[in-house]
Length: 174
Image 1 (cartoon, rainbow, N blue to C red):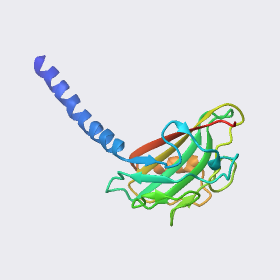
Image 2: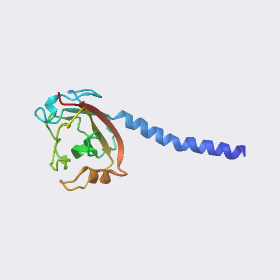
Image 3: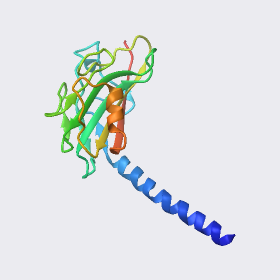
Image 4: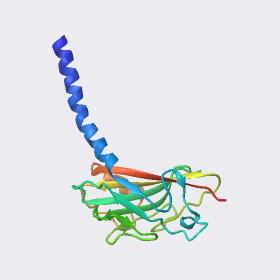
């Protein structure tokens, strides 16, 4: 009985090691913005109250084996369910910056919840909303039509995510 228990405990520890390694890798990749810090207010310039351009981003810690990156911006506080503001994929993994209002060379933009391609800034109907910018490092480039949605991107990324990180911004009309 003791021998079986010992094998069970050792087996569980061995199974947990790859998970810990994956979590460590995931925590190394970073997405930051010079326009706002994590959990802070997104400046109006990047919303429907301003010029409605995407904020600037800096990317670091991308795993060496990554073949592409994907970026999704969404609002889980929208009244009708999660509202997708921006969908990007096939970003070169060597990309270290995304300029304000820019799209990295070679990246594809998909459809947002307004049924438009590209960035649509925060524009909450009422109250403060949370806006998540999620960056994914992928094991391969994705073969998606340019009018793909977030749902199609999520399906295409299944089993290909090497690492991920997120930046949270907040916004309410003033």
